[in-house]
Length: 349
View 1: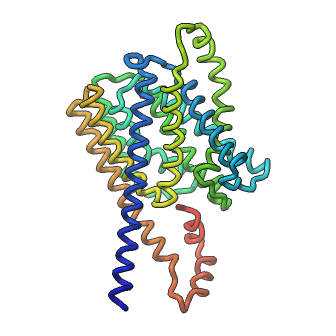
View 2: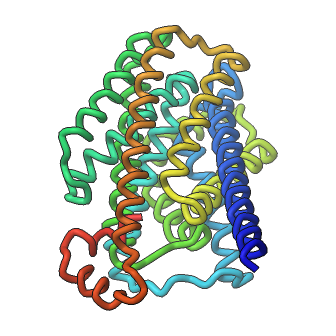
View 3: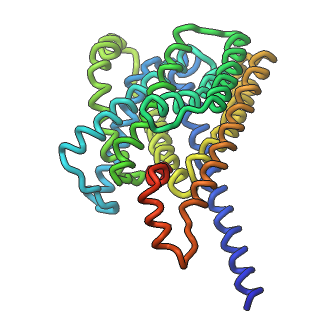
């Protein structure tokens, strides 16, 4: 009996690991595809359609329509019960931050190489931690801040060694990182802490129309006049259709990956994807990657790995605290209620 149950357990563990790897593989592939595809469309030397707001709006319009069909028409997914007040106070700010993050990150592809953008994205843990401390979601620790400074130092070296450094492109990418980090913290504060969890479809159903609305005003001012005068351009349905479908699939993959594994797994997978993109950018797109680039990014990479390892350790310690012995379960619950540090931990992941 013991042997049978242990082999069943090990089979279950192997199956779980294989499924996790499958989610990671799908996310890496789709993220890789969307980044390279967006670069191809926006770059003046390739497809030459440098309209990042329009591209983001096409993505959001496509995602909104598909999500609406799945929720309201086919009724495959149940909508979340949400009041108008909650929608305005929680979903709208998240939608605004998401639209700015996508707009600026897509804009950066016009000015910077794919490899250098991935190097700048290594600053994401720095931004998330700093904004988390600012909003009191993270506790300030000098050791963690030293780690954040080491990541920043590595990125600064990579920037110093960049062959095609463009100040405006760097400003756009750093702004995208800041808005994305703020959005991630706000999701925790505005939704997770209120017990609201959105699945991949409902998240797009509520957030994508918000993004579309927020992008409309800058689009009318910045890009619409130029597009109106560019009569030579013909909308390529195959290019924009497949690109939008990839963006929709990536949104699903992000939520599935975090939902079925963890945000930490996504961070580790992100590091693998970044190295693959740097290699692809250098070997296929023929972007210049200098030795100083690689040394700087290598330093930042080590800092990110250390940060993820510390996070994992803290997460395991928290999980250990949350599991009282069976015979003392009630006492454990009382302790959880009394101990001010443990209760917020329940909404952290």
